[in-house]
Image: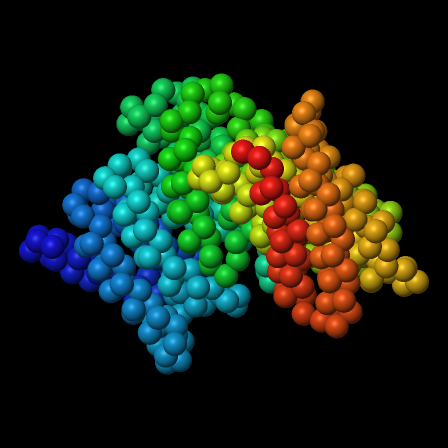
Length: 440
């Protein structure tokens, strides 16, 4: 690092550390809420970070600054006297949050990944700071419609303001800077703002400070190379998936954040691989709605992001393997179809284990999983189903085995909810491995 960069690191660090007690004093004098104080620091840090492309030439300086800025935040969090004093500007809210610890490393990671591309760096930082702060403050001030997010809640009004602000944070730099024309910029902004709103809605405890910048970077990088028709298609898929989960919310046992996570998982499958990969997870979701409505389970269970994590464990390895070129599209499509068949069979077993008087019927659950969840993906092998003969037979037997295993596990570890969801996803993934038997 040059002397100029060391001087810049020292100046930025001094400015940020000096701003914390200043904002605390101003908020105390004005009687502002703890959320306003916290988001004021958030915005100040973000706007400072937005200038980094014009201050630093290499990522090393930003990483050093991130470490030096994070250490005082850790001290403010862990030392009780400081936490109650100067640190109250960051920790004055009642809910637990690790956002101030995650903020600087996330910024450094985006700066590193952007590799000098101002747009790929600046836009995620603006979404992280300006849009997130606007949504949080609007939700605190005007929020009336709540939805569950982790151990807390978010508001519909706050999410709406986030969506509008994030749209502006994307389209103004892209079009104003001449990176894309207005039409392309509008579609990119709509997609990225919607995804950002969903990501912020499902993140709690400050993890949006990690999810928003990194997620925005990776999505923006993919969207910038697409033409308008492809962008429109991706927005249509996103809106359809979001409409599906929101329309089924009244019958679902999933929390608001888990519903958003379900839509994001389906969209990730569709975008990383192709739209057919979203069909098996969507089929499982539709079956979930039918079962919960039939047995009146809405309000009985409160399924959170653990449920979405379980499906992600079963789905994403196949999607990522296709994207990396390790397997072919049809092999991956068979894999995700087998995985969702196993997942639905296990879910049906778990539901029957909970219902009073219901007898476990693993063969019935297995057939249900295959007929409802696997077929939407396997129909794309038509008219040549011959390569599926052996893999389907082996996978069907594997699914039956994993369903029996889960039935045994569920009876003994039913109180470990998060662990059971991880086991469900892992067993479903194992049962799908026979897809690798399909000839390339």
